[in-house]
Length: 114
Image (spheres, rainbow, N blue to C red):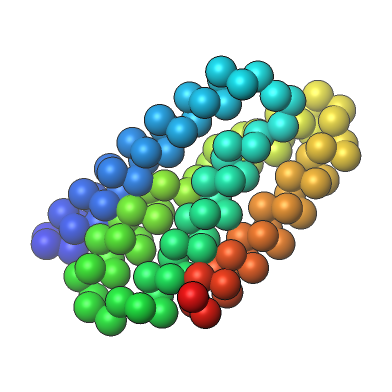
């Protein structure tokens, strides 16, 4: 039960922050999901740092599984990727996919080494 609460609190804070940052996307009106890309890359870096530095299971659950899990978003990534595809923006779809995965992995590795 305690694990559920720890992860839930972290996820709530992460999701709230992601939502606030996503509101910027609507204001700047660009045709590329830049904010989600930056959120996912920065979340990967943060998760890498946390994984390398925190050895307390409860804190890692709160910040890693909870916060980073709520902050980054696979669902929004897939929705935006699909929208680009169905709008026939094949190159933007391709680059969004590649940049998200390549920089997500690199971000995690960089985070571990920080």
